[in-house]
Length: 199
Image (cartoon, rainbow, N blue to C red; front, side):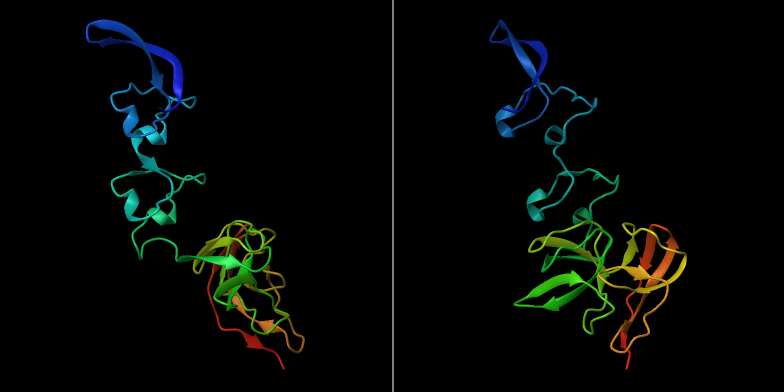
C-alpha cells in the first residue's frame, strides 16, 4: 500500500460503511480503487499521476513527464536528436561543477578535468554537476555551461583543472584551445575547437 494520508473517507463495502485512509502515494496495482489525497505541496504525487522526472527508456512508455529540480525537462525524456548532446561516462578523478572535461581511453571511455598544461587533456565537453572519482558523470558536448563562475564576457580559453580563462597560455608545451564565449559571469557557450600545443 502507498503512503496513507491522515484524511479518511467513508466507503461503502457491501452495504457496510467503512472508514478508509486516502493515499498520498501509490504503490502500484495493489492500490487500485483507492482515493488519492493531495500531498504537502497541495498536488498529487508523481506515483499517483504515473509521472517520471527521468526516463529509464522503453519501460517508462506511457508515463507523464515532470520537470526536474531546475524546472526543465530532463534530457532523458527527450527524443534522440532533441536536446543537449550528452553521454554518461565514468570519472577517473573528482570533477567540480562547471568543469570543462577531457574524454580519453583507459580500458574504455573515462572522463577527467581538461588542463591547458598537458598535451592530450584538451576540453571536449563540460559537466554541470560535481562528481567524485570512479562514478558515472553526465558530460555535455554542446550547449551552455551554466555552472561556471567568475567569467568575463567574451572569448574564453581552456585553463587549468577544467577552468575557463580569458587569456591563453604562452609557455612551451602548453595547450591553446578556444572553448567558447562567456556571455555572463556564470555562463559559457561551449564550442569545441581543436587544440594547439605550443613549441
